[in-house]
Picture 1 (cartoon, rainbow, N blue to C red):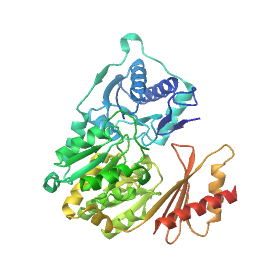
Picture 2 (cartoon, rainbow, N blue to C red):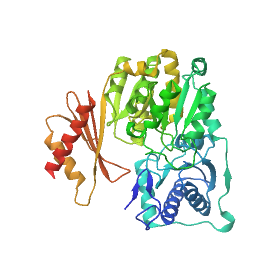
Picture 3 (cartoon, helix red, strand yellow):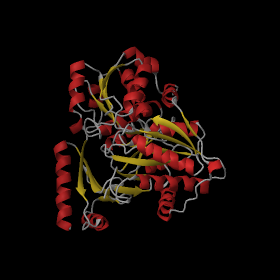
Picture 4 (cartoon, helix red, strand yellow):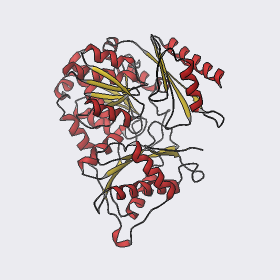
Length: 460
């Protein structure tokens, strides 16, 4: 079974049986549910939705199904075609639409696709709203439009231009400082839409771009999650080209990983740390990340006399806390940058622009910049779920086992030890328990993860 229904959308593998995989019938049912939910909650007759997709092989098929379904409900559709998650988020309020649907399974392999749902602000719908959409999907209480009331359809090809111009207009993006450095950037866009959008941005910033896997054909040349073990090709190319920095994005361009001039990982967690360092150096405020993100962000915030808070995992939870605390910067340790002066969504494009501004102004190499930050190492492991595994029982036992430590149950179970921490939580997107660890060395982080897995096995 590879169909995951959650409050943030529906995700699954293409093909197979209805209700077990992401089949055409499942796509139509879920698009109908979201469209019907919007109609039930909006006090207006004509609704308009923005849709956009990453470059997955199934994208055009899913796009056609979603578009036709919405039109069948009497909803107008503005189709951005090949796009990025942050671009769709930008365009919803830009075009005064009533919501949006992004067709992407983010970092999942090519056989996956998903519908991610946006409200009229271009932000992910709330958990409560998502539950209502899921209930509608189960009830199949849909009422389609008669022929004279079908929704209209139009396309737009200027979304990237609008998105990029909004970034260039940000006061904290110093275009001239970046241009003066004439950075050479190697880009790995995993053959998805980052291969269109990121070079457009880099060109406006006066950078030389060396493209690797930038053909948006949906054939991912490696695992699309931007982790060190998947990025050997770009690390070698950076050294060969004598580049200043490497940029890696996932298929929908909401996660940003950086590589230094030596072909070494900057550290996925440190994308947000570096951007926060730049912004908080210029404006005291609040930084937000989730419970599974590095302590380095807390340390950097405190070094600038700023505050740090942690939310439950999930972009909608980060955004909610950012709004509550009026945060200057926020995001997730997986390379997700949320800069509220632009919009409340993870955005690799604005992350690139802010990082390059920071790099230019610091007048350092990427490796020198990284050396100035607190040194923490993350471990990420997982336990595959089987029918006999009771996740809630496991988490309850682990909470009790470590009750004398600093334990948080805001989201799963996080155990803060003096020199390291571990966070256990059930994934919202895959049938696994995620195990995040952090310590002062990679060996210690990995060992902590292995020890926790052994402990879990001893308790089950």
